[in-house]
Length: 217
Image (cartoon, rainbow, N blue to C red; front, side):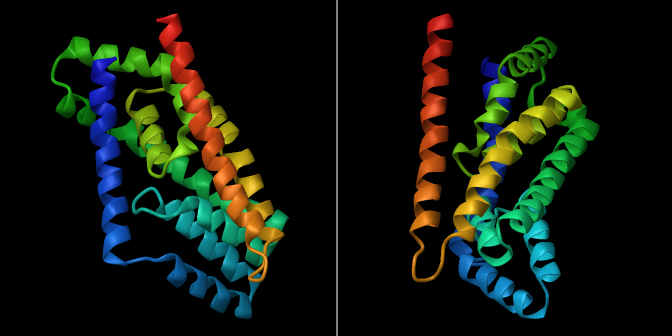
């Protein structure tokens, strides 16, 4: 388990660095994103959908507030079209992260973990826990992208990865976009409550999984 933890920490650290950089340099703020969406809506809903999809895809490379984008997608596009735009972006990010890591994963894994036995141990550990890690990855920012890359690096079967990614992403997006669609500037409570509830659900799920796994071990 230690080799997997080491590998995870390195990948997680890379994504976290991007998150901190974006947050504290103000290169991309929620206010800027909301302004873009308002301007795009004045032209066509198609442009709003394109911006939502591109932002969520870009989350693979730069830190994007995924939950906020999904809520804004529902607010500006409505539940159905907001869900479709958000889901497309999240799918593209996950699949791209998996494929890139699958292609270059051997070099990355060999560079980070020199010992072959430890590499095999990391792969076996992720094969055992990876599906649940992906399912619960929406608990905190950058964790979904980290698990997508780990899936590719450890050569998790694509169908298994995609199933876990969809099971994690679809309910998350459906709830977030619905909350956005019934929110307004005068009544932002649905969006706020949804954000709190989603985060709490994933954190509680992680806690339960950790306790059960500890007992089993």
